[in-house]
Image 1 (tube, protein in one colour):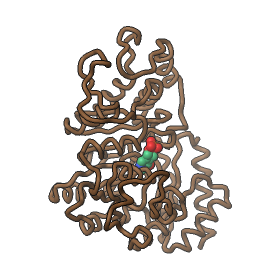
Image 2 (cartoon, rainbow, N blue to C red; image 1 turned 180 degrees about the horizontal axis):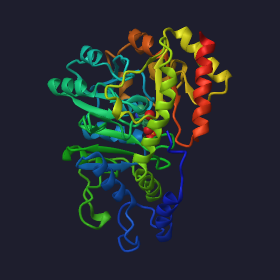
Image 3 (tube, rainbow, N blue to C red; image 1 turned 90 degrees about the vertical axis):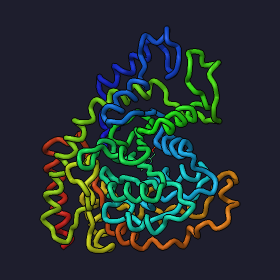
Length: 397
Ligand SMILES: *Cc1c(COP(=O)(O)O)cnc(C)c1O
């Protein structure tokens, strides 16, 4: 997860282009900007990288999800299927548009289980948001098939999986929309930023308008532009886009280093039969921001986590106890605690979020450990980590 690890001359150069003109706004000021269009350039290069028609760069991954759901027409009384293992933003976006989050289980890919998704589809279901967690992918082909056959939207929350692919096709291009985050702990960063990608012009153009107060962006006088829909402001600044542009040009290198470092740790884990690696549907396509694996029991996972921590191995995540990534600690969400009153609070027939049956997800996440992969590790640091990991696993036996 190197977004925060690198900030080099390339990033500084792109930012300085913007500083040299003082045009920090992504739209207009054509004469003053000396032909620097950082957000637009990012969109063009990211579309090419992803091999899609449209990209819209926004202020965050959360605004990308909110904009995408809005543009697809999802709102009051609609149900959206989400996983209980994700960063809370996925669920926040559903609540923000006034739709009802419906939790389905995850499987050993750490992503939505196609079988569980099928069992949760009702006549109110409008979309499934699959979250490609911890750098790698869901059974995206099966989920795509299910959504097509049920005629519901598939949104890929690819915020944690930028650059991963499945059978040679980029993650984020299987659904109707792919959403990305470029906050500072993601694979590449804008400081703050996010994007949607799609091949659907209607979704793109509604997103384009919604994220900028409804502007249709037709003509060259912003004040005279039309406003086909009511919007919001989820724009990115040119300064943030400039950082992202430099980072995007480094993405292949970043992923290559991550994969190499991931394999170095994987070799140690494979020596122990009580450890099972996470199921990665296409191993070659893992963006390798983490190495994730299961212990045999919750107790064993907890013990190994403490041993690793005691031995000074940092960047170890035991997600089951995590405040932000697993539903068990999301009492603000399960009790629908908001600062204001929402339409959602008046709905009848809401799920009883405090008594959901997610035992399949519990059985998976309670045994799960992830180790963060960094690109700044030197060879001796990788070696030190291999030894520490080995030593910790030996201590466990
Ligand atoms: C980071 C993240 C988001 C939100 O992205 P921000 O840019 O921080 O708003 C959404 N979903 C997942 C899975 C994430 O990891």
